[in-house]
Length: 210
Image 1 (tube, rainbow, N blue to C red):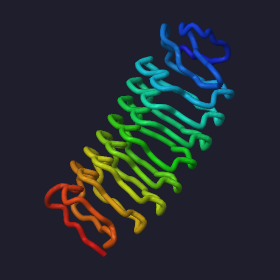
Image 2 (spheres, rainbow, N blue to C red; image 1 turned 30 degrees about the horizontal axis):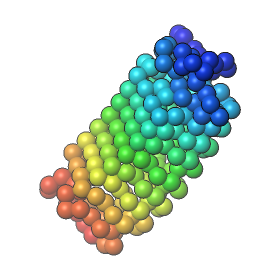
Image 3 (cartoon, one colour; image 1 turned 60 degrees about the vertical axis):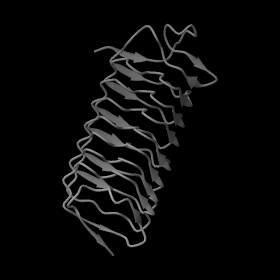
């Protein structure tokens, strides 16, 4: 198996393009495994899209992963180090991810970040306040744990999964349209102060306000 350690780079785009500690990816070559060096602070927009990557190692120097950075690869397991404070839209969408460990520094999970994968179990970190549109849509989620910091669940955030039961924390202020549609939920308890869209769940789901 090919392993690419990004210790040397060429700024012409043929290999790794790093400028001011921002990794812009490479264009001409593809490797199955990728270890990003520990001097990189940001992974740029579409840096490693469509590179057939199966495994990546992200160092704890990285604070930002930009949109589509690792989209359309073959990644299976992902660990996001606690240094990462921001992951932008579609960063890991359209892979084969079945297991993720998220950074404890995240406050927002952006749109479609992990959509179209195979994630089964999810623990949302304790600082997360918002899960945006389609963030985990089209996965295989059977179990999720939502933090008491969570305030907003966006449109279709968990659309098309395999959830049978969820616990909505009292902190949640709004659940938007389609957030939990196309799951296997039969009954759910929602805090009485939570603003819930009439189409947040499938028709027939027994919504109990408390």
